[in-house]
Amino acid sequence: MHGAKIALMALIVMAACSRASNSVDKDAINQGPDEFSVLPARPLEMPESYSALPAPTPGGTNITDPNPGADAIAALGGRPSAASAGGVPASDAALVAAVSRYGVPADIRAVVASEDAPLLKRATDGGFIGFITRSSYFKVYAQQALDAFAELLRFRAAGVQTPSAPPAN
Image (cartoon, rainbow, N blue to C red):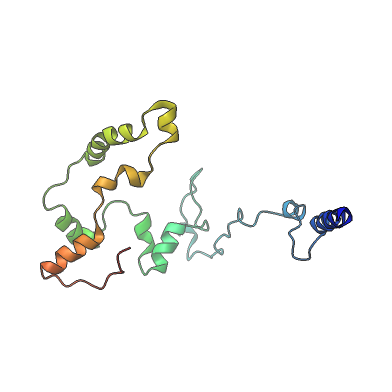
């Protein structure tokens, strides 16, 4: 029986040292460029006139640099210029007017942060024990979360047509 254990151990050691054909060569990983750090540039284009070229700005962007925000907007059917236009586009003026019809406080971020600070402080205080037992984001705000199925039933009881919903857990 002792010989069988030694043979089994030798088999395990040989299997661990073997090199499978589908294994990753750890040394080969660092031998080439990192393909995720190379961003392809847009193709160069000949301008209609050289006077239309923008003035170079040190530290600024190049017209061949990738612009993922504008690319995503264009892919979704929007105007890529909306990514860098700043402000509210004229096409969204009606939406902004409807949303802000009851007034918009200018310091809303500061107000929300000051109202939220005691809740976050209470959730994260407690020294070392508090650090270990720190509540997750979802536990901290659990009392403020809506019950989706209760709201669904409330809307249905009020006569609002609602789409089908997944079953409650």
